[in-house]
Amino acid sequence: MISGIDISVIIPAYNAENTISKLIDSLILESEVSIEIIIINDGSTDNTQDIISQYTDTRLIMIHQHNQGLSAARNAGLAIHRGRWVVFLDADDDIEPAALAARYHLAEHHDVDLLICNAKRLDASGNFRGYIHREQIYNKVINGFQWIEYCVKQREWPHYVWLQLIKSSYIIKHNIAYRALRSHEDICWTMDLSLADGRFFISNVADYSYRDNELSITHHRDYYDIRAENYIHIISYIQRQSRHEKYLSVSRHLKRHALWEARHFFGLLKRKVTDRNKLRKAFTEQVSFPALLYGVANLSDMVFLLKLFLNVKRG
Image 1 (cartoon, rainbow, N blue to C red):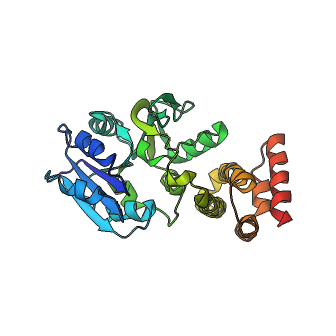
Image 2: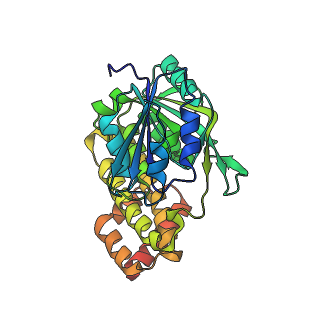
C-alpha cells in the first residue's frame, strides 16, 4: 500500500445505535499510528447511520449497503481498504486505548503476516468471565501449519477475527476473503489465513473485550437452523481442504478439526434446531462420514461419531 495508512479498521454495523459511538470515540483518539476507520452500515433500521454521519473526522469512511451479513460487509471493507495492516472489529465490543498502535509495533517488530492477541470475555452485565484463549504458543514466531497442528491438538483454535492484525499484502497475495456464510464465517477465514502458511505471532495481551450478548441474533431460536446449516458448510469445506495436495502435511489435523466442528453441529441438532430432518439430509449430502472417521483420535471421538451417525441417519 502506498497511501501512508498503517491500519485499516473495518467495522460492520447493524442496528448498533447503542454501542457504535463508544467504539468510534475510542478509535479516533489514536494518534500514534495512521488509521482509516471503514464502517459498513449493513442495512440498519435504527439510528446507526445518523449517529455515524455526525462524525467529521476525515479518517472515517462509511459504506451503506442492504443487509447482507457480516461476510459481505467485511468483504466490502476489504475492497476499498488502503492500509498496510487490517483489523476487523465488532460494533458492540471494546478495544483498549492504544491497542492498535501496540499491535502494529509488535507485528512490525517480529516481521509477521498475522498477529493474534487475546481478549477478555464479559457477560451481558460486563462482568469478567475469562480469556478467549489460554493454551497457545505465546511470544514466538511460528508458521501457519505449525499453528494448525498445535491448535487442533489443544482443541483451542481461536478464530475470532477481532483478535487479529493481518498484513494487507498477505490477504491480497493469497486472495483471502470471507465466505458467504451467515454465521461462524470467521472459522473459514482464520483457517484460510493459516493454510497460506505465513509467519504468525500469538500474544497473550488481552487488549479487547468481547461481551456475551444474550439478545444477539445468534441466540434467537429462529437462527439456530442457520447456524447448523453453516456448520455443515464449514465441515464440508474443511474436508475439501484436507484433500488438497498443498495441505497434505496438515491433512490429518484438518480432519480432526472437522470432527470437532461436527460436535458444535450435533449440539444444535439435538437441542435447538426446528427442522431436524432437513439438516440431517443436508449433512448426509455434504459431509463425508468416512472422512470424519479419519479424524478420530481417541475413544471419546469414536463414541461421539457413532452417536452422530445414528442420529443423522435416523432422518
